[in-house]
Image 1 (spheres, rainbow, N blue to C red):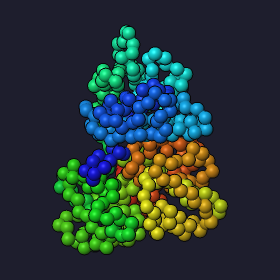
Image 2 (image 1 turned 120 degrees about the vertical axis):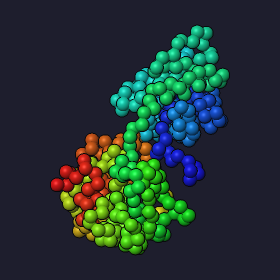
Image 3 (image 1 turned 135 degrees about the vertical axis):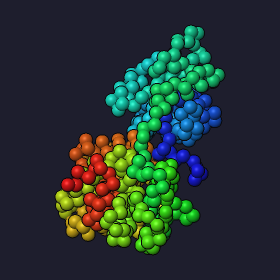
Image 4 (image 1 turned 90 degrees about the vertical axis):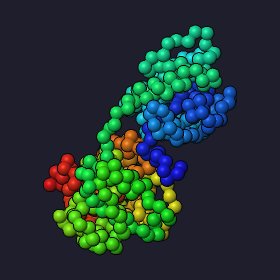
Length: 400
């Protein structure tokens, strides 16, 4: 994906589910206009989820994911089904593909019940309708298509848009905190962990959000904060720093200038800031032998001083003075069983969509395990968390 492409976390996620040989793979090929998935009469051809990022009018940027059959069998089949169900957690709308010659089977009904439970909108898609003598009329939740002939594929795209709606959810990273011509200073460390020749995704997205608010973004390294502030003709509306630089930046930025971090902004953007602020106090209740889960939403090459696997464990041990155990997950991995953990510390989730982050937060809440995020944890350890949530009126009271 190019740097100018919409990241997958900002795309509408469309999941394609159904029994083996229901026509899922041929449907994703018809929707994308490409031979993305292997189509075969042999049941179980699709073994792993296959995703395609594309523009789907009238929706815009989407991520379409084909999955293995929900009726797969055997030990390997069970693993494939697990992977298919895992896709549900990030799905904004599901297409349940049904063979019209067989009708809705028990597996389909169980899946639809799960979609209802998770409040995920869905459409029953009866593929292979070209084999029917009489094709029933489509409805707002049921449509008859033929991936082979292309019949009703355009209508299916229109129906997906109709089921989702096109209204703006109003979520902003920081633009809603700004007025036109406000100055925002972004503190971006350039060290061994920084990608060569580019900014990381949260930094890119935050700059874009500032520009969309008709505000001004001034970017500097952590060693240049004082010089940058003194060179400005007016006081910044906000300073946003990489969380790892909190200790230095919080000293260099005067108290009358609001300060926060990219990670904290993304906790807010993904809908989990209040629970993350409440969850961070679990640090003070940790005991020797407790296990802490540190989870990242992306996968990347680990540096020698990696934030998730090296720095955070070190800072937490120093803060608590406890002998703790740490476990780590990354990418799409997130444990089903969470009760063994004393707390969970998650990254900002820039590579995960809002539904996925809310799912993980809900799983932690259901297990009774406090969950916070990197930026909030680091701010708390450095004694600046109260200051760093001051820009968010609805959060301040949690720390009073």
